[in-house]
Amino acid sequence: MLRTVFIRVWSFAKALPRHLVKNRVALIVTILVLLAAGGLGWRYLGTKKQASGYTTSKVAYGNIEETVSASGEVEAVQSVTLTFESSGYVETCNVKMGDVVKSGQVLAVERSTDLQSAADQAEAGLESAQSSYDKLVDTQSQQLDVDQAAVDQAKINLANAQSTLDQDNQLLGVGGVSQNEVNTAKGSYQSSLTAYKSALLTEAQDKSQSNILAAAASVKNAQAALTTAQENLTNAEITAPFNGYISSITGSAGQWTGSGTAATSSSNQFEIVMTSTALQVVADINEADISEVSAGQSVDFTVDTYPNDTFTGKIASLSPSATTVSNVQMYEAIISIDDYSKLKSGLPATIDIITSSANHVLVVPQTALTYGSTYQAAVVAKGGSARPAPASPGGSSAGGTSASTVASAASQSAASSSSQGAVVVLVNGQPQIKHVETGLSDDVNIEIKSGLSEGDTIIDASLTATTSSSSSSSSSSSSKSSGSSQSGPGSGPPGMF
Image (tube, rainbow, N blue to C red; front, top):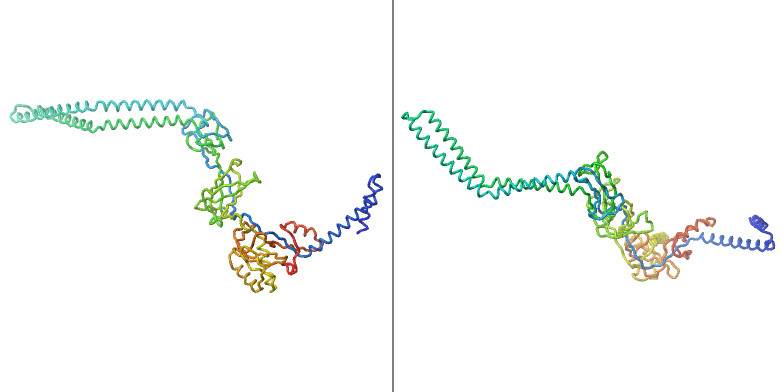
């Protein structure tokens, strides 16, 4: 192999320009020395990687958050479809898609000629009804006097007819009048009686003011007709109900449009869809996580458009009922956004809801507890002692416990909640088990409530090499580690027993 290397080096040296010929020998020697040093280094490192080792980190203060993940979409807080309330001819459209508009701004105008004519007619009808009503009110007292005089006269006429009929009936018995004359008297009496009843009815109606009430009702009907006509005239303009954007426009100026209903593929309705400038996120929360989520919680989210930016907000509301999405029950949450100036409606969002947080607490890598559990199990399996140290809140202890104590602790830890665990602490270069009380976890780091102190050196992962020839594999394993890498001591971590 060395012969092959020498031949290649010599071929390289011969290819050098002539003015470097004098330095060929020195160059060859330098290259060979470097190759030899590299070979020795590779051999040494390859041999070292055959031994197991571990990575360490220092216990330090930090902030930690527990989150619930969700997906959602940025949406406008308000969205409305605007149409003309009456059918007609679209005269002008003053906006286009994407325009920013202000509340009250005129967006489109319908031709108002026919609408103005209808409003004028309604106004004239109201004036006529009002005039009739006023006339009835003004002549009411005079009319009652006329009615009373008519009743009196009808009463006199009826009395005269009654007297004439009585006299004729008496004369008929003695032959003083004919039957025809009696019949004529009876007809006159019936006519007088009918006239009297009619006069009484008219007087009663006028006294009850029924005619005035009817006239008042006519005035109200005319007023309603005028209001409708004026509203139709006013609604010949579509105005923006709030500050926002024009999302879409269906139709254009110059077309005839229907009234009131949203456009369909077969309709000729003119409509403008408008959304507010204010944005929110609508998120779907999985049923498995909903018990941890409540209104008011802080939220971080990202969108693909701005992968390096994290946006913040709060849960404004949470739906009490679920919807089924792909056979999973999901609960809708509305998230208010602190700053939406860079966002647009429709962007998908990846959301982290902060359910719990702790600031300036002791934290260690989550892998340290995984390693501690593995190490503790290995100690118990060997039936020996690895100088485990009992937990001492706020500080470290170098005291030892027996293997049976370790086994008992391991059993209790397995049976207890996630608030208990074990880590391996390096004390004077030797691994010792420390039992700790844990708190919040973000799946990368975990809070230590008791059992460790700031600055303690803990083992958070092991390094296990394959063979001396697999140097690339060893390098890859080392590159994944954080903290320092050390080979294990004589009674070291699992992999060294």
